[in-house]
Length: 556
Image (cartoon, rainbow, N blue to C red; front, side, top):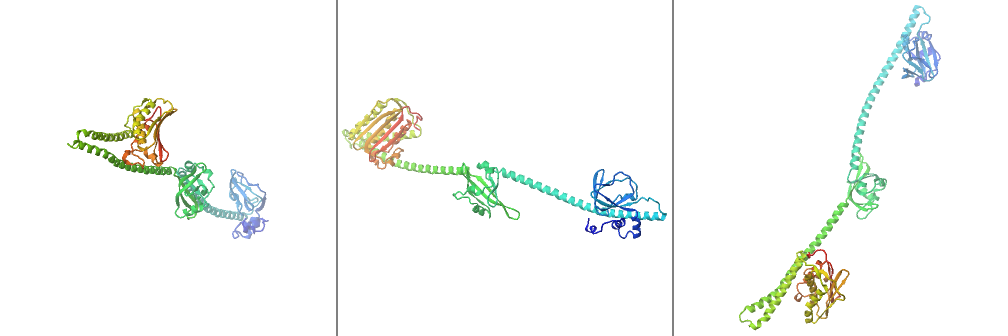
């Protein structure tokens, strides 16, 4: 009920009701008085049937004064009337056809009833006046109905237009949402299928989300990092902690890229390339941070391997330079060592060839000198060739079972006269019988002879002792002298080709090929050669090799 309707005083008479529901200028007071005689007031409780669908018309028209009624057709709700003056059953004014709808009160309602059926026939002019009044009432009702229908039609049209616009807007919005959802799905797939680990953090650096690569590449479960501060997950490579304030401050301008270490609970620090950028809304307000991590362990491994190989190349280059230096030194030494015997041979041979320079009975000493110097030349050349063949794997060894004790005593006997001539004693010490060994007798004799030759060269007084023992399946031969000792730094160089102790003069001591040759022979027997010096006095050289040598039999 509107405020205007609420201001109308309660209706107690039909005339009062007519004045309320009919236009004020449509009827005179006399006409309203006549109509009031055909009207009555009807009060109904809720859920009372006023008109029933299909019943014959009783020529009564109802006007709603208070309350509301529901109109239904075939038990289906059609509309609700609740405006004062709404008419019900108005077709009863002009037709006796059955009622087309059922009208039921929703609540307690008051209605004005106009009975259009004339019970008693009045005078013709009175009947005419009454019917004329009823016709005018019908016209007023129809006019109000048409106006109300027109207003409702416009309202329905407006509502339909608004509904269509809303439907169109809803359709466009659904399309836009579907497009956004498709993009989100695509971006989500791209993020989850990315090779690099991607983290999203809030402004305080707390991790909001992470893709599967964090687990696949770094072995860190994504659920375990949600909610923790990203600064606790990684640090800087220089050992500084990953303070989020400093990291995020660097990334607010143009982003930040650098190398960090990722802390794994079991694997320790994992090196990674890190890229941090901001995620902003259309107004450039900060929403979150994007952190991209790339595992660089393989790259670091390759870098370390590259550095290692570079260091090896540097060492190899240094060794090559040292070999080149040794080569130059050797060539110089060879030229010096060969010049002396060649000069002697040439000088003595020229004297022999010059007629009258040497008497026949004086030629023997000259020939002896030439033979001696030629022997030196042959020895040097043979050693160089032997070492070259063994280093290049071209030396063939003849391994066979030999009597080691007999071999050692034979070599010692070959050098005993030379030792005696130098005022030295040469003893052989074999405390227990030796079992036969498999060896190349010629090269092993050469190796033992080289050790004795060195001992004789560097021992000016005292003695030289050769020891031979066996333990389990290995044989040991030691040559011990009382000569000049060797400095510790020089021992290793003596085993290198052309190596010689720094304190040794070039003149009487040869090219320094003896120990390298001995080393290569022992190596071919799957053994070892070691040198030990007691300082300035005495050197001990030891050959140790198995009784059944294995491995390479070519000396390479």
